[in-house]
Length: 257
Image (cartoon, rainbow, N blue to C red):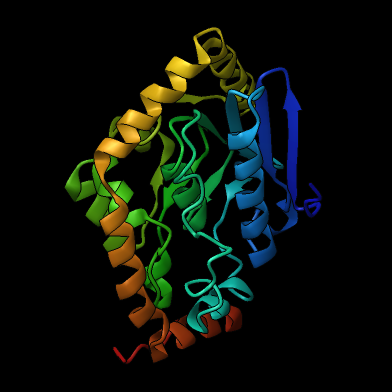
């Protein structure tokens, strides 16, 4: 398996680590990176010797700041993602082994969508969490509307989805979005310790426990609905204006069309 340098993937013992490796761009995601994360997740899920995965970001500032608006979001608007079966845009949704997020900074937009697909989350004290897509005339079409209201109280989910404003790590812990908040230097060690604890348990039992929990949520209809209605937003004039305004560093001028 040959992945781009922007996505690291290594195995140690029974634990795999996926690293988003683009720190100079706040670990923002290109289409190539989205596809590579899918490929790493498939390998992890299919390898019988790997029982737990950790996903994290390179550097000290960001876990993942979401899609690269200059590249990925215009492609969404043009249908390159929503119409591409090779890019799920809801990573980790079909993985039934445990996935731990080691959140070392900004966890925004597509970054938070990745985290919503994980099972356990360790956050640095300086981490922030948000879904800012509406500020740029698009929506978080990677499962946020389905997963987030199931993981935090409704009012908190709506605050994140409708205002585009982020919350800090301690509030994220308070509403149950993350398991622990630790000093930045402890994020990966704590995540690794948690992974090793899980690896001491029966791997078939662990995988089955997660599969039952995930399947019982019956979220597939929600994903289909999000994809269908999301296409309407990404085809709008506002979805063209938002990324353009971002690139030009100015407030967007939305028309509601």
